[in-house]
Each structure stands twice: as C-alpha cells, then as structure tokens.
Amino acid sequence: MILFFMHLFSKMFHIKEDVSEANRENNRKFHVPTTGDGYIDWQEQMKSFRYGKQSDFLSDLLLGGEPLNASINGCGLIAVYNVLAYYGIKRSFSDIVYDFEKNGASLFGYFGSSFNMIAGYIKKEGLQVSDVPVSYAKGDTVRFQTGERVSYIITGLNEKGRIRSMVHTIALTCEGNLLRAHNDVTGGRLYSSLAEAVYDFGNGKGAVLKVIMIRGKEDEQDRDSNLQLQ
Image (cartoon, rainbow, N blue to C red; front, side, top):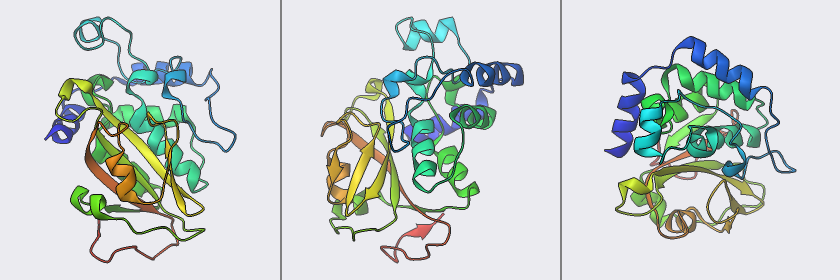
C-alpha cells in the first residue's frame, strides 16, 4: 500500500520543466562521490545534489525545516545508478535525476521515487527485471556461484511498523560468491544469500516491501523458474 501511494503521488504532483532544468544544471557542477569501483555508497554525501521541487511548507511538515536534496530523497536513484554501474552502463547522476523528475518523483520528491519507475527505468536499459515475492526472498538461502552476475534492488521501511521512519531503497550486487549492499545503513555489508540480506535490512530493524532481481542483457538464466519477468 505504501509503494502504491508513492507511485500515485508521482503521477499527481508534477515537477515543471524549468525546475528540472535548473536542478540538472546544478547537479552537473558537482562531482558524484563514488567508491574506487564506481558505486555511490554514502547518500549523506549527496547534499549538493537537488532532486525534486523545494517547498517550504513540505519541508517544515516532513523534514523539520531542512531543504530538500538528494541526501534525503535520492536513495532510489542511487540504487538505479549502482545497478547500471554494475553492468557497465554509464548514466550521469544528473541525467537520472532529470529523467525521474518527469514522472517518477513522488510528491515533488518529498516521498522519494516511484518503485514502478525504478523497475521500468532499468528495463529500458535492456536489463532483465524480475519481481521476487518478499516471502520467496526470505526463504532464498541459495549460495551464489563465483562470478555469477546478478543484482537486486530492495526497498522497505527503515523500521518495521513505523511509516514515519520513511522508506529506503538499496542495491545489492553479486561480488565473487557474496552479495554486497550499497548505500545501506550497515556500511556495505556482505551477505551469503538473498534471505540474509532481506532479514538484515535496516540493520535488522526494517521491513522489506519489494524486491526485484536484475540480470544482464545477454544472461538468459534465471535462478528460479517461478520468478515472473515483469
């Protein structure tokens, strides 16, 4: 239900083109703080980047008066950036922001990004996107083969049962035979299975709402034939 309303609010509240253009020009001025292997792992370093339309009323109501910026609402875009980087697809963060502001920013960006847009954006890059039921993910203890090329995006509440704890979205990439978390609260923890990552979401305090699996353009193998390609 939470993700439904986030998607609905991305359709109801639109960001004007001049605002998006101004944000893109601003964002192009700054260096994206990536790790040595090209991932964004620290959202709090993204304060200079703008995503969405600033509203003093909404900032007072939802952010304690803090101005809107990507360190607050950019987790979904960061997850997209990291997944694309994993598959060698180069997209500037400023362009991803601009694309999402067309129809993916929820409540002018104050509620982050539509998860539908996240999955759809990745599909448009030619990657395979499969929905993974949360109940299935919690039981997926299959260990990864060394060199397996698979990634996931997980979104959920930071704290189970507390809507005001807000929704957070992270990417997981398969490194060797382990899953590596990006932009999570654990500082890039490694997991031996998808289930382990799901149960540890939000340092064990969170509640996962949605999981998608992503594979490369030419990788036709699926870890489970029951997963439905969206």
